[in-house]
Image (cartoon, rainbow, N blue to C red; front, top):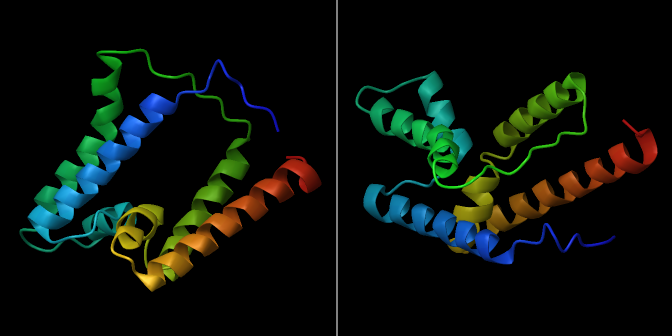
Length: 144
C-alpha cells in the first residue's frame, strides 16, 4: 500500500471528524435522539405526526451540505470504480445489514461508541470486518 502524499489531507479530515462529533453530541443533547442516518431516514417511511419535520430538515442538511461547501471551495473529484449492478447490490446489502444490525455506522460507530455501548462496539466491529472482507474479495478474488 502506498500513500498519495498529494491527496493526504489530515487537517480537513480532522475538521470533518470534529464537526461530525460536535453535530452528533449536539443532536443527542438538544433532542435526546441518536444521529443514526438509517433510523432518521427510516422514520420518514412511516411518519409519526409531529415527527417528520426534524427528520426532513436533517436529510435536507445532509444533501445540502456539499452544496454549501461548494460555494466556498471546490468539491473533490469522485471516482467510483464499480458498475451500476455492483452499486445496487451493495446498496441493498447495506440496507439489509442496517435492519439486522438495528442501525448503521453513524448510529453505532459514531454515536454508540461515544456512549461506550457494548452493542454498538460489536456492531461496528462486524460492519468494519464485513467491509474489509468485501473489499478484499471484490478487489483480489472476483476482480469486478
